[in-house]
Length: 502
Image (cartoon, rainbow, N blue to C red):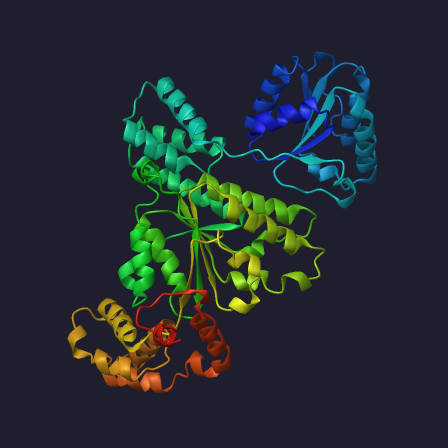
């Protein structure tokens, strides 16, 4: 259901108090006015703290700097006269006992009158005593059609034109921004060189990074890593490469659904996060990193609102990769958290979206402790596949050493005995191999020479890998993977041999 459809239904159903969290004041007010006109030409009055009421010549300025008087204005209007009252930034006054009591009184009074009060706010901030009388209505970011209409209007106004492909690219790059930001960045581009050009897409992407930073929920993560930077994990690479074109229009015509996501479970430092970055780079999609901890806030309803905001931004930016690092830490011990059920509600909203989403948002979640994850998230339909990323085999360690040394010493690669290095580092993860090379470089640098194979082996002898310090925990993980509950990311790992013998 669109915002206009939902708002029209709520007007007809006489929902007295509506709460719309949005930064797009101008656009939502336009939509409200249009729907109010369609619903019997209802008058619309707007109030803000500085200027008071606007919209009626007889009451201009009424309620200025007096939020309680703004509510009392409702009683000045005839009980049978329809009206929509828009109160801007009213969330700042809801903690006042007089305001809260007046709103609850009006909620009863307006059930029998054709009037609606709409509170506009940039965020959800509803006190406990008003949760039952306020109805939150989501106002989505501009759709692709809205953005295309606005760009075409701007082109007509400036006497410019764009090719179909560039117009589509520009529309796609603008998705996820508010209409005000879109207008601002396009005006900046036109002011710079008098017209819209293909390179203006970079300006839009920079604006997008800025707006995502300001949400303080998602990070626009630069993805420069490539699939070739991942040593080993051949099964996982093959799976990803087969789905490289799944977001294209050709895939839609073929009948393929959008890929849903991937859960990477395994030992720390084995390349799970690197894989998330490499997927975004290989598929040429923006990478959004979600810190689940940022979803939780102190006010009632705000955590759920932030979750919906995160979903809204991710879907507006789609197709994209949504990377959730260490999801096990966010939702571990779900039932025992003493937060009045906030974590459970956030988790419920999130997994329901994962199961029902139709937008091309590919979720890549990583987890180190599968035992602490709620079983609901492992159910088929949340993710396309669950992969177990274990410790690299000797062949995979050779590939990892080769990747790092090719980057660090591309002209001197043959001087390193990679075969020996892989053999002498059993139980080392990819992250530990990288740290070993850093330590070897320190050894060589401190002696004013280049680092050698012996330096790497000396550095390795000083590192105790996680496979030994957390042996019991890692053994449990490997037993879980060996039981067939996840697909193995590596082709020739000991676990795959163990499965064949079972």
